[in-house]
Image (cartoon, rainbow, N blue to C red; front, side):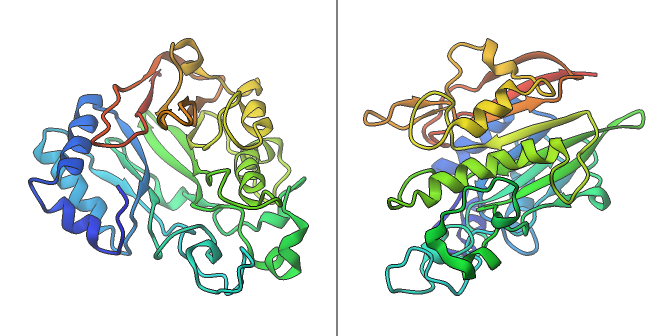
Length: 302
């Protein structure tokens, strides 16, 4: 749900005949999730597009009284020539690749209350401050001082699930580990965006680890076995005894089809903490009109 310019998503949500929006609405209403995390949805300051999406969903028969969105790092200028092509202020030179501020952000819709006063945003955390960061030396000291780890965002969003219980959503969207040079900036950053969660759970960051129960969920843009990138970070999460991987029991477990040249990969994850009971998991049927990525779901019992 990303568009080529600011305001265009809101425009398209106002159209009854936009085929991609209609496919998204159909897919979401078929899933009927209690909590829904959206990847690659344009952000605006007043959440007008997200509110319009909620209204369309209500008209289709599913209500999400709680919504959450915050400005992503995509499109935020650095003032540096990060790709060293002699030109400034290009999409490649932003904190996260984008044609404008807010393009391709994250959003949450929930049928349960979101505890906004307890939200933690880690999106301004510097890449160089991550223990064991793989930041390439070619970027130089100026980039080390200002370049954030998150290309989109890292959030902890608590949801009130009733009877005094809180479920914490640990949400992120990693960069594509390709489209760079020999320094492998995108591959290294993709790895470290996923590694952030392991470091957080280990207590190695200047923030306290989240108490369980929680769910790490988002698009890592990394397959543990195939494709480009450095799979060590996602493999570490999948093997972490503090987490569980319900989708591993689902065959096939791939979550996107990139076509003939690349094929199907697993890049989207929902990893509940080990104390939770995962009754079932899977992914929705492919709807290419909505997205080439398939919706991934886990049914949790409390």
